[in-house]
Length: 142
Image (cartoon, one colour):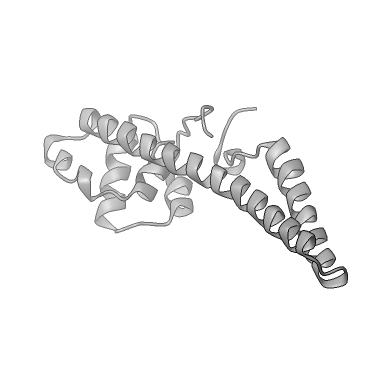
């Protein structure tokens, strides 16, 4: 399937539909055990269940943060090559969110879209992505 704005979000089925639900059910079960069968073991089980769920969530968040940093670097290099000299001086003005959204724009539409994003101070990723006419897929996302 060709990637577009409508289907570009990344869902990892085993993570989103198995691991997170199982960890959430485990946490709820541990909470119930603490209230119905209070003991040191029940409290320890609750702490472990909470830690496992947080571990999964933070692991995903850390991977996405690293991905955003790589995208920022990639986009800064791309903009350096594509923008007119007067626009290059403004590359550092882009936020990570703006650069993440702009990465889907084709090389032809990126310079005018970049100017518009900065001039109009557009910060909403969804709004920026919707402005892209020639969507460039990114299949290597975390």
